[in-house]
Image 1 (cartoon, rainbow, N blue to C red):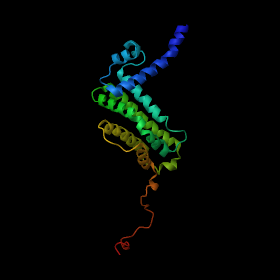
Image 2 (cartoon, rainbow, N blue to C red):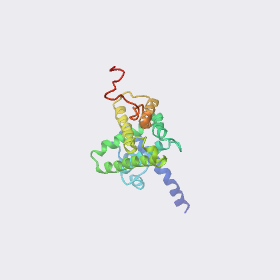
Image 3 (cartoon, one colour):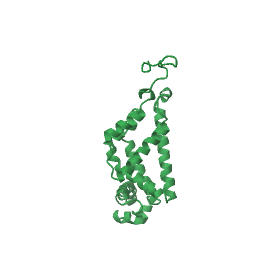
Image 4 (cartoon, one colour):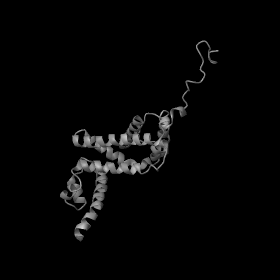
Length: 214
C-alpha cells in the first residue's frame, strides 16, 4: 500500500519532469528529430513509462505548448484592464522565445502530420476564443462598442507572436520588449482614443471652403 501511494504521488512529478525535458529537446533539437526513445533514454525511463503519461509524441508536444501558454496567462494579474491584459505580457516578450520556437516546430510538423495539425490547431482556436470571451465578460456591453473586434484582435496579436518567432529563427533583430508592449497597447485603445476624426465635429461643407482652399 505504501509503495502504491508513493508511486501515485510521484506521478505528477514524473509527468512534469517529462514535459520540461520534452520542451527543452523540442526547442534545441526540433520536434521531428526528437524521438520518444531519446526522451526515455535521457529521462532514464522506458518508452512504455512515457506512453503511460502521454498517448504519443504529438500529445506530448501539445501538452508542452499548453504548459507554456498557461505560464503566459499567469503573467496577467487579476482584474487587469484589457489593454494591460493583452499588452502587459509583451513586456516579458524575451521570456517567450521557447514558446514561439515550440509553436513553429508544431506548425512545421503540422504540414505533414494530421494528428499534430488537428490537436494544435484545435488548441490554438479554443484559446483564442477563450481569451476573447473572457474579455467580453469582464467589461460592460456599452464599452464593447469602443473596442476593436476582440476575436480579430486576439487572432492578430497571436499572429504577431508567431511571426516574431519566424523572424527570430531567421536571426533578424527585433524591437525590445517595452516597444512591443507599447505597440500592442495601441491596438487595444478604444476607437475614440486613436485620434480619428469624429464625424459629428463640424466639417467644411461643399459650399464652405476650408481655410486652406480660401
